[in-house]
Image (cartoon, rainbow, N blue to C red; front, side, top):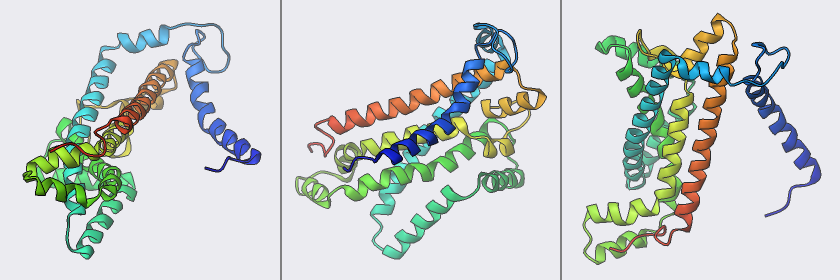
Amino acid sequence: MAKLSKPAKIYLALVFAILYAPIFYLIFYSFNSGGTMSSFEGFTLEHYGAVFNDTRLLIILMNTVIVALLSSLISTAIGVLGAIGIVFLRNRKTRNAVLSLNTILIVSPDVIIGASFLILFTMIGVQLGFASVLISHIAFSIPIVVIMVLPKLQEMSSSLIDAATDLGASKRDILTRVIIPYIKPGIFAGFFLALTYSLDDFAVTFFVTGNGFSTLSIEIYSMARAGITLTINALSALIFVVTLGLVLGYYFFTQRAGQSPGTGGAKV
């Protein structure tokens, strides 16, 4: 791999500085005892204490985590099966059409998706709240999982499946002992990406959430409208740390899966 030139390195450093400077500025002032972002008066953890002492905020945090985990697990299961189904479609035109529809769901504006779900739930009588948010998050996460899993499936040689079939493996054995172990890095990537999207989502959730149920993104928006406080800084800093942990966890699992002797296929 060619090394980056000095101007390219400077350009990348500037891009990262522009992207991360506001985040670190926000985190820095979350420790300010002055209560404002105009001047740093002293170090304190009181704003973090306010976050953990707010029972309502902790309930909203639990709502966010539960929705993210459930939607990620369900969408990963459905997305993996969907990706496998797409790869094994015999008709190329049908396969390309399905892939195009999947891509459209990814690139469609969140506002359009959120408004569509709101209309759908209103028409079929689904009460807005936990169920509507969970269904919406599952729906927009499935295409993400499909996109992450497909490259590993397309990379897998069909000779692995043929060999397993010749050895008398059933379709279930082929799925659980050949295909799933091979595409494990893609599954982990899809799960963590779906989890991150669910934790960060605002636009879709804004449309489908109801009274009595909220997520962190909606709550931060509501708090910011009432006036910026350093409690928002502390909460945002915690979310950033959690997201960073998810990214590191994703790389840890993918690296471990890549070094595993069974990554290229399992014995039948």
